[in-house]
Length: 77
Image (cartoon, rainbow, N blue to C red; front, side):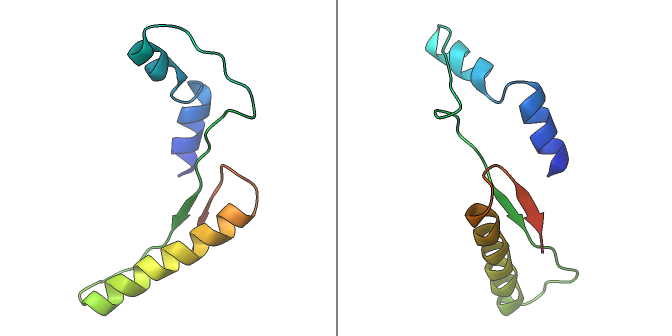
């Protein structure tokens, strides 16, 4: 996740791709920026549907914690 954020920041996010799609330059401000928050849960051997549901619940839980904090961050559970 850290590598993803570093790559996005180093290339000014997706601004260049959006400009190419629109066919003209755009101006962004801090207020108009789109951010991304990621919650990551990992598991070893997931074989049952209940395990998958628990993994999704855990990822949602950590995502909620990330989103209630500073924008544009990630966290592992």
